[in-house]
Length: 136
Image (cartoon, rainbow, N blue to C red):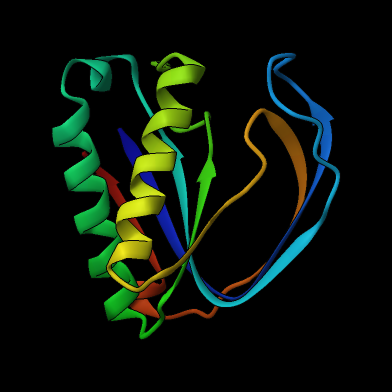
């Protein structure tokens, strides 16, 4: 798994082009303030250790959110950080589990529309811990 975590003063997305037929139709735009956005590439090899990858992702998201003094976290599937890609079903299930664990730990956690290209607007400050890349 690869994850690029960006702390954003504001993060806006709007689904534009559906790329996976099996996902539900989504057109609603959303905006978040003072949020940590995880641009996450789930890789094929992650399917071999789902609970380990889930645990490491949650740990990294909590750490980065704490460092940026936010309790708002957005999970965004971003299949551009690696050539390796997990199956969409695996990624969706992993995101759902991570979201549930983050909410259980009192983080206001959301997911962008999976299986879509999106319009994005990102306002991110130039702080050292506002952008963190990790290979998990």
